[in-house]
Length: 249
Length: 249
Image 1 (cartoon, rainbow over the protein chains, first blue to last red):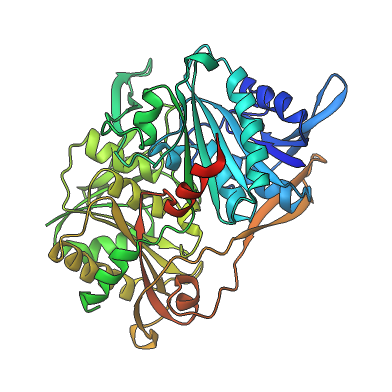
Image 2 (spheres, rainbow over the protein chains, first blue to last red; image 1 turned 90 degrees about the horizontal axis):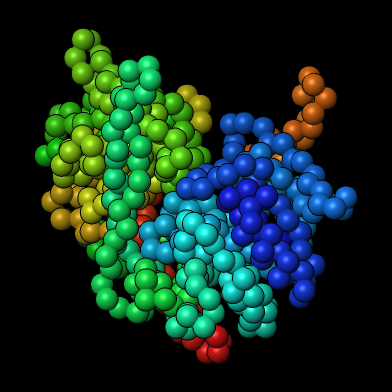
């Protein structure tokens, strides 16, 4: 098995290294990841700037390729330039949860989405904490899921969005197959003034309080479940499509 | 009627000005758009940098607010800071088509998606050319669609992705309600060496040759139709969800 690994926290991120070590036990692993931190970059791609590629070494051996772009750039570059032919593409392990509407903002999720668009089985894996991460269980689970995806011949054009509580394995209640929470993440803006007298706003997000339904990823994650949300890349709204046909355009 | 207008080509873009003039005839229009060009920025949001807001004047009257961020930032800022309460949010008119999988890469589309996430009727409008744009018909059609969206009480959490051929109205074959083309846009990489001897790659995209079905946006657009694709924000793949439940995780 050959796995391509990317992320949005950058090629030196602890979460990428943790899942790399775990995946190496079951597969050949190619790492093509952003040179820099690219959190909340969404599915941006770099068309108006050139991209640079840099070989990264660890213990005098090549570890991977760092790209001066986004996670989606990395996947396109790995396939289009480096000619890697993976059986599976994994993006992560991200520092921070990517449940609910974070699927739109997350660079990690975009790495998996790009993989799925290009026709590869793919998953995004995120750890639900922004501090003191313990990647050990998440890394182990990623390998387990990787094997399942190959075994079950994961379908084209879709991917898995996996979120894992930052807990010891015994504290985790189990794995739930969930729906994406669609509640909005409203912007919270903190106004301040810089040393030059200019007003600025720093944005944060207000995490929704979702419906108490363990079939919804955001709630299940809060309830200490691992959430596995299957994501499609055909965004057409079939019912609205029929409705609009009556609009007389 | 109150309309919030954003885009990804920046607040000075010709396409934004064209639709602004058209919308002014039917509504109060607030403009909150990126200060700079943000094409292919996807649904990126700015969390690791501060945002600056700048009032933009035209003929000594305030025209709008430029934000040092992305289209999605602009929508969040307009609602969260400027407290604008629009009946409809429009993103565009973009210079360049955003059919098919461009819904993932496009900042224009992300502006409309963010609006829909926050609970507003929304549409993204794009003109299918990268040179010599004629926005006149596209601007007129945008106003017409805006009125229809209000009239039909456009549903929550969804939006329209509209693509318009760069042709005179009489050359356009009509308006089609379409599905999103899911064919991938493969990266094309052009390798070169800069004056300092460093290798770089410039990425472009290979537009797919879709199935010849005028119900698919990419093909219909090529066939000189306006395409109106209804987009949903719940990405859960319902059939895969049931399938994965058998995986014994």
